[in-house]
Length: 280
Image (cartoon, rainbow, N blue to C red; front, side):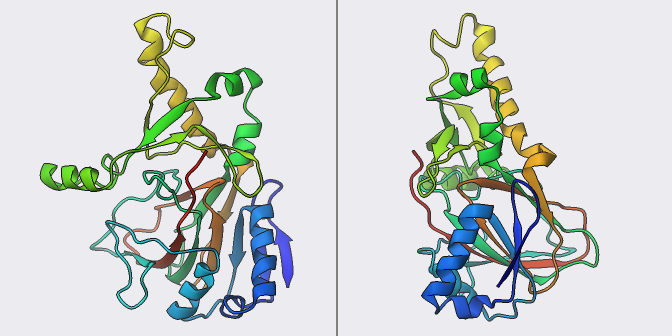
């Protein structure tokens, strides 16, 4: 196995291994998991693996989750097909934590490129441990203990009819999480708000609000400031896809952004998302 670190803060390219083998080799999987915790996102080229091997490898991390909008491959539950074409091109270019609208957001994901454009279509990941650690100390104090709600309704549901959108929200109600979570395996503090986050739930207190202006727009301006931290280039790594390239990321400590600069060229990706823990 060869490991090449890509930036000072996030990302490594791994070569000399096959993920299909790691699905059945406990020792090799343990090495990969340790690298993931260290680098937060791993990239592998030339992974000509089957869907069954893709799913089997991802399941080494834990149970797989379905998606209420995208659905799964019928023969491989948990394998979501993210296919973009000239006819079907919903937006995806926003900084987000997968499933932040769930009570238990995803632990991580294994994403494989099936087909990609000749140019464009990169994905960017940001290290949200670094984003938190480099906040000013007074801002860390200010957000300690804050909690926020995240929703699927205002994102995936926005283009639906009112009835369908309300049904989606009823089935997947907004989830409440700490603004700063603790990584369950490393103990690191993580800035944990993204594009699914709608508002703070415990901001309107005497410590934070003197006048109405402090509550609104004060709270929304603070949320915007925190959400924008993923945009800092020093926290990022950018990956150019080729067919059979794979990315494995820790969804608990990163956010990602799929650059939508390739339409109307097709782009076909398949992702196995892993069920996560409840943040604290």
